[in-house]
Length: 217
Length: 133
Image (tube, rainbow over all chains, first blue to last red; front, top):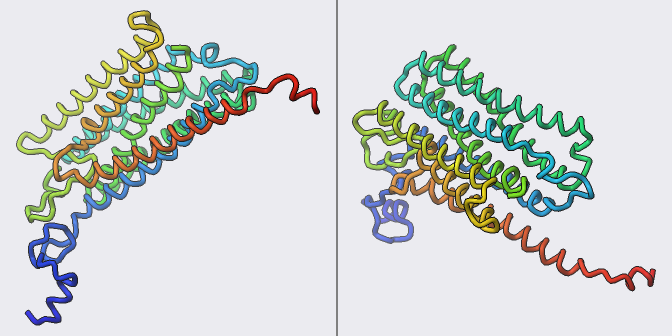
């Protein structure tokens, strides 16, 4: 190898020529596309969680700012929250089964698992919408106090994410129906699974900080 | 699922977040992992809801207990649902997670700290202050 070529391959002359184990350094090539795509989506999810942490911080700061209005003890129905929690947890499990089915290339099991996931997610959204509607109907909407503004923002933002996840779920089922388990479709299924599981993690923080602690524990 | 990302060459060893490393009995092992995660997460959730309304533990300690249970459940979700491991093939995922957790901690703890100090300094508003205006 000429001196010029050696300079190009090893510009800092650290003597690592051909011994680097890092991907992207010639021989091994870059990481597989599945790893690159999922890692990028993982970074997005973490940025989403950072955004939620800002909403959590504002809720924590405003939790006592009820402006003479009702607080969490009067407003929260823990039985409702327990049902929502069960729905989301089991839907996370069935979403995992859907990714196992996709890994096994089983179209019927994939449909079944995704259908159960969708129904559980829809029940969750229905319960949350009815809770919000009840609060607004009693005059305890987001305008009532700083506490309620923060409550509707953080819980509503999570609900919005779940709703988007339900739409994404339907498009994934449609894509598998139309195109089958192609590699690009499998990557999207992987990202959808990550998204759905991450929403359940955020809900764990939500029911603990907002509902259980807010209901006077 | 493993044949997609495991190419056999030495540089293809990173795993994608969410991907299980299935060696041998693929489907049974995959389902078992999700079942185990579901059981653990359900147990922690039930414990949270139970402790929140009971006198089983010292009342002032309940918030701490609930936060500990929530963090434990997030760990269960990360390990059994998102398949984040401590192995070398998951280093990138763990580093990104650690950075995200650091930012979350700074945002939440920093906000609470600043607002507590602010409230502490603003609170004492003696009646004489109002009279001057």
